Length: 248
Image 1 (spheres, rainbow, N blue to C red):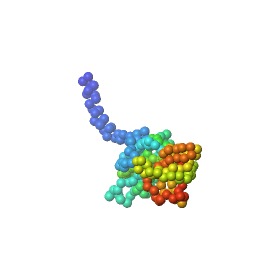
Image 2: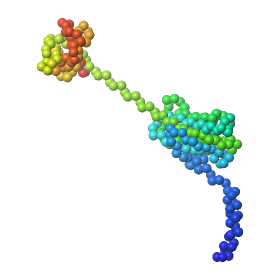
Image 3: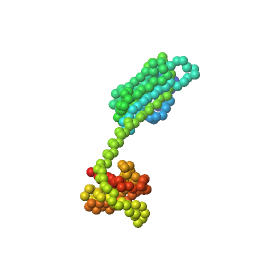
Image 4: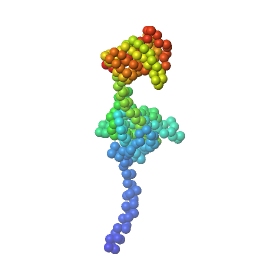
């Protein structure tokens, strides 16, 4: 055992030298399988330096419903490098890994993607991947911020409510009487034979103008008794008529 130890010791410095020349480990999020979670709606700050082996950052996010996406990437201001904007790109992929959209900054400090491009179109809920990348080592370091904005697909408008279907039964005013609990009631010359029932509503009119609302209280074959709801808008006259709304 002592002889084995004497043999191994001289090689220890050589192991240290060999590690000093090792390449840095691969960038975990530089490929889609190593993508990092991204919070929708919040700005995320990160950086790329292709010269150090960090040429791309991949992220993933999920939507819970159909909607439209907007992805923004902006170069962070650098006082030492205000006039130089490195080349960088933005890419969006779907759950199946298929590319959905991409864009280059073209010398600008900001680039964006809208998906779907056409207004009024929406993409189904799924998991997405998005990547920010620089094309070559010569571009240098890039500090940036990234945000995904999601707009849910609007719900379809509620169907319009079906208008109640009534027919109007016109009746002549026969008599006006006071109710025991207060208020007025009227007797009209149309009843159950015309389809009038208790609880139905209508109105009193003078000269075609409504002067009061009424509610049927009692019904007879050829007549009805209705309570006047509220106060009369005008005095009753010989040409006062009643109209009752009878469902079809």
